[in-house]
Amino acid sequence: MDKISVNKMQFFGYHGVFPEETRLGQRFIVDLDVFCDLQKAGVTDDLNHSVNYAELYTVSKEIVEGQPFQLIEAVAEKIANDVLEKFIKVNEVRVKVIKPDPPIPGYYQSVSVEITRRR
Image (tube, rainbow, N blue to C red; front, side):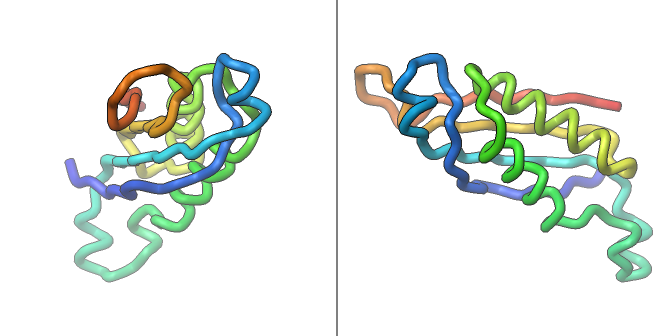
């Protein structure tokens, strides 16, 4: 299966369990892979046979910058569901939501969840 990736999309949202997260907000990074047949798009050079990268970005942006969720698992699930709903050509979607600055003590680069959903 062919794949389109939109990597390291950065947004500002208000997701989290702790009150300061929903009040102050924080950065979120999203990696999105969609799996679909891209052969006809490659042969015809016609966007109508592919999935528009800008629209994938917009779906992710609207969710991350929209309604707050407590868990990044819920953010990832919403992105995956919306992509499968809005893009009929997509057979499978992989979503990774990265929270680079969660309010937990210690030294680490980030925390993240990654899910895969299929039609």
